[in-house]
Image: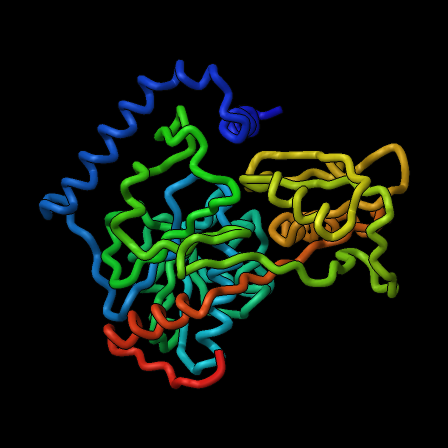
Length: 338
C-alpha cells in the first residue's frame, strides 16, 4: 500500500492517530492564509482572463462528484451554443505544459480526468499548472465564450467571475480538519462564501445534484455481451472515495465483488489486473481511461472489464442560478427545455 493510499484510507475511516499530524495542519493553515492575503492585498498578482472564468472545485481532497458535474455542464452549454473551453492542472500528468488535450491524448501525459472530460464532450481543453498559460493557449486555438476551470478553487492566481463548490454530503467533511490531519483544503467556513452544489441522495439545499448510473459497457471487447449483476467481480478503483462506487454497485444489484483499491489518480500496471481466475473486473470511467491505455499496449489481455458510467443530474435551481450568473457576465442562454 502506498503512502497516499494509506493516508486516504485513514481520512475515510477518521482514524484516531491522525491527531499526531495536527502541527502540520497548523502550518498548512498558516501558509494557506498568508498566500490568500498576499493575493487579496495585491502583493501577489492574479491573472484576469479576457473572457469570463467559472471555477468548479471543492474544499476536500478526493472525490466529490466534480468531474461528472463539469462534464454535464459542458454538454449542457454546448447544446445551448455556448463556446466552452476547459482548463485543468492535469494532476499527475507528465506534460510538457501547457498542452492541448485531444481524443488521442494519453492520461499519463495530460491526466486521467482531462482525458475523460475530452472523451466525453470533445471540448477544447488545455492542461498545465500555470492556468494563465493554459487559457492563453486555449484562446490561441479556439474562439471561446466561457472558460471552465476543472478544480482550482484554491488557485488564487486566477481571478474568476463564477465559483461553484461541490459538497459531497454522502462522504461529508470527515473530521473537519485541514490537511494533513483531515482532508479539507480550506476551512468549513468557505462554504458560506460561494455557490454550493450539494451532492447527496437526500439533499437539504435547493441547489443539488446526484449521479445516475447508465448501462455498464465492456471496455475491451467488441463482442456483444449483456451485463450480469449476478457475476462475481473484481472492483478495481483508484479514486478519492471508493465507498461511493461500492454503494453504486450494490444499488445496481451487484452483490459479489472483491475490492481492490488504489490511490486516487493511480497509474495502473498490467499486474494490477491479473487474478487467479477469469472473473470480470468492474471499474469507473475515470479508471477506465488509464486502463484502456494500458490494454492498448497489451492487446492479448483477455479478461472482461466492465465500466460503470454515471451522469450528473442537477436540480432546476442549478440551471436557474447558472443562467443568472452567465447573464451577469454577458452570456445569454435561450430559455426553453433544460
